[in-house]
Amino acid sequence: MTKYKFILSGGGTGGHIYPAIAIANELKLQFPDAEFLFVGAKDKMEMQKVPQAGYEIKGLWIAGIQRKITFQNLMFPFKLISSLLDSNKIIKNFKPNVVIGTGGFASGPLLRAAGSAGIPTVIQEQNSFPGITNKLLSKKANAICVAYENLERFFPKEKIVLTGNPVRQDLIDIDSKRDEAIAFYNLDQNKKTLLVLGGSLGARRVNQLIEKELQNILSQEVQIIWQCGKLYFEEYKKYNQPNVKVVDFIERMDFVYAAADVIISRAGASSVSELCIVGKPVIFIPSPNVAEDHQTKNAQAIVDAKGAILLKETELESQFGIVFEALLKDEGKQKQLSVNIKKLAMPNATKDIVAQIIKLI
Image 1 (cartoon, rainbow, N blue to C red):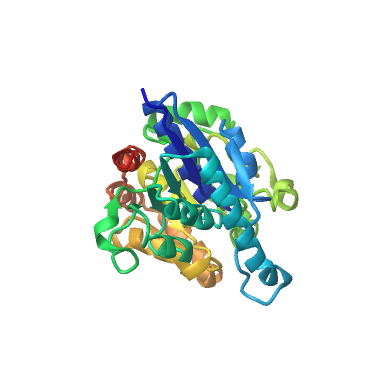
Image 2: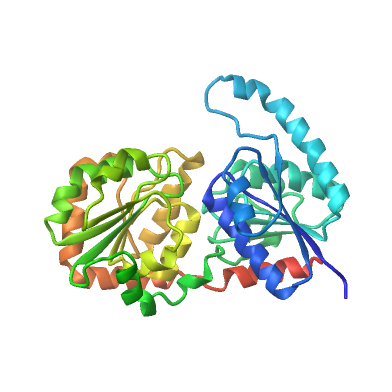
């Protein structure tokens, strides 16, 4: 039997890393003897998260271009040349059957090198508005797995496959875990639970909002699981109390989703895909600081299907208290949002992406 080899590249944020790990795990299920190598950007979070998931990773000297003139920008051409040379070496030595890119800076040079060597490449685009790396790579890619419809204006139509985003399989049946989750977080069964998600690094504006509104939220008989992010944990851990669980990072996402009655979240692509499967009422607060404002576009796609509420950062001061209280009191609205967001779920995304990869072996 042939021993297959796969290289996966994606990183910078959890939204690029976890889909890559999910794809590798599914490939490993189907090909237990396969060899895997991840390629990421040095000094980024993938250098820790990928080995924790049990895979080898090599780092490239690559970073994105800043929006202002900086020393980092002046270094960019040198980093790009270095990364292309290293990528060529990695491809030559490892000899993969297929290379998969899930976005992030490192996937650019690596997929470019693979394409030049005649090795099939697959892009997995998480967002409703693709980043520049994937747009450039799409011309040479063999297949482009997407999570949103109408991406023909960015990618060659004949290469697009609508699969959805890979999500953790332990989220498929969270209802059965509610009691266990409530006990795990030492929560009160009789109170509503608000889950606040700021993404893997945290969201400053969301944290400021929760800090300001904390007493108001608690006064409505609500308890909170507040994921403030690694960057902000030292600043916000002082709010830990019986009804407020402040955490930097969440290992058991299935438990926090199972415990939650209402969720406040950024609108990164992976989070949106998970929330569709989870099917709880969501208030999206998109980050305005991401390329092409893609978080707003991700959230808007759900709102258009009447599956969530969207509040822009500029609306938080005037609108949050009113919107949150109204949602909390309206069980019918909560149910309607849950039903509608769940209709958009694509729980078989990982398997469907892997099916596209297998076609290219």
